[in-house]
Length: 155
Image (cartoon, rainbow, N blue to C red):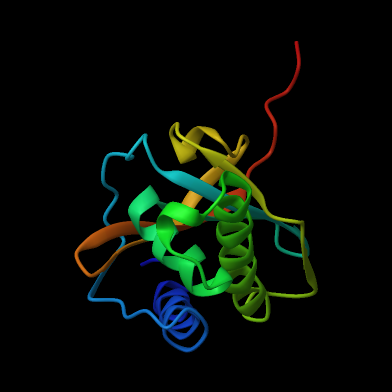
């Protein structure tokens, strides 16, 4: 069973629908696909009684739609900084709503955003506990929750 899988799906749909004005076509909980290495990756670290990270990974075409809605610009007018800001804010909104569902008192870091690479390698000392593979207008994106694991002992 995926930790908070249904709650993360509901939170993501709420952010997508009410804040971003987008609809989620399909959601697949718990099935890990190969990483799309061209994706933009947003991440917020979670600290407190529960530790880990929330990752949002999406391709440029979807991020341009999100940023266009946030900034009121056409996709070709957006700057790389606006794309980063839009993904950081989206990641923060999903993470902030999720934080209330985690056990105990938890705090979120500021969002970090990068372009390209495998999101699974961006969060060291963590294990995947929940993954959602979603689509908006047929464009895939991923929401992942990772739980902090102990660092290996140093020799």
